[in-house]
Structure formats: structure tokens, C-alpha cells
Image (cartoon, rainbow, N blue to C red; front, top):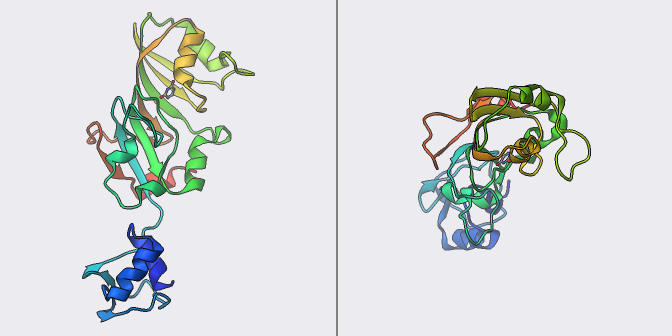
Length: 230
Ligand code: URA
């Protein structure tokens, strides 16, 4: 790889800033100052910028415990984006694999790997998302079957895919769905005449929200968690 490209892929510098750093003599390759942007490097060489060793940023996979009143898109005038909670370089290259509403908390997966996130969000892949929810009105046992058979949502053609509703208390349930329609969980409860008052995502596929992550905290996924998305 060209040295200027290597610098761009391992820092937040643009190509022109990388070239300037090279011309200033701030970059070394195995201890020798290199000023040529086109100099070819391999991953066996130690490249330093201002004395700090660099390594190319490859695919990244992150889980974050989303707090209330944050959004999963980048621009909003009222609420901050969850991406602002990540202190990583090149955060602008990351995207969210399955967004949550501003008033939903819990597991958010963030990556720069589009193929990986497609496996999570594509309805064809049937990746289960499990939510813990609370409702304004009491839950009815008969809804377990209705959710399993599929519900007719407002302004949608066809029924929702089979969902697993597990009633935990008069106003609390777990719901697992394999689609990600707009406001899907809230609309499913609305379809049976109820209203979601609290919503928290516990898991996506086999990836469970790490209990050690306080609200707003994040960590990189393990190899096993990354590979579990197929
Ligand atoms: N369903 C919703 O209604 N909201 C979410 O944030 C996620 C799923």
C-alpha cells in the first residue's frame, strides 16, 4: 500500500494532510524518515507518525448501550447522536445496524462493514431482535397467538412475520421480531389496542447486550459475536 494511503487508513488525516505530514518529515518507516507519499509499505513495517506507531483500521464492530434521548441518525437539532458517544477515529465511517427510536434504550450495533450489517437488517435473513417492553394497558394472553400468526399494521401490506410474545407481568413482556419496520414494536402493540411506554433492546441475533455496559458505554465485539451474524 502507498504510504499516504496507509496514513489515511490508520488516522483521521485526509490525503492532503497526510502528504503535508510526510513533507514535514513527521513519518518514519522502520525508524527512517520517509517523505515520498508513493513509498510502498507492507504490514511488516513499523510506521510512526510523530513517533507514534500506526496500524491500519480494518473492519470495526461495536456494541453500545443506547441511553434515552439519543438518536441513531447523524443529524438532529434536538437530540445528540449515539455516534458522538464513541471516542474512536473515523467515527464518520461507521453506521448503525438497525436503528432504535429516540425513546428506546439498549443494544445498538455499529460497524463499518456494510455486508455484516445487511445480515442483521435484511428481513430475508430473519435475524431476531429481542425487546423488553412495558405497556400502558394490561397485556392479554390471547395476543401471544396473534403475534405468532402475524399482525396487520397500519399502512402496511400483508401481515408482520411471526413474532414471539412472552408475557412477564400485567404490563411487561418480551417480544422477539425478525423484521425492522418503522416503529415496529410500538405499532404491533398499537395494532392490538395497547401502547408501549418503555422499550429496551436486549439482543440482536445471538449478540446479547453486555450487562457490564452502563447506559452510554460501548465496547468492541468479540470474534465469536462477530461470527455469530451469518
Ligand atoms: N420498534 C420500535 O417501535 N421502536 C424501536 O426503537 C425499535 C423497534
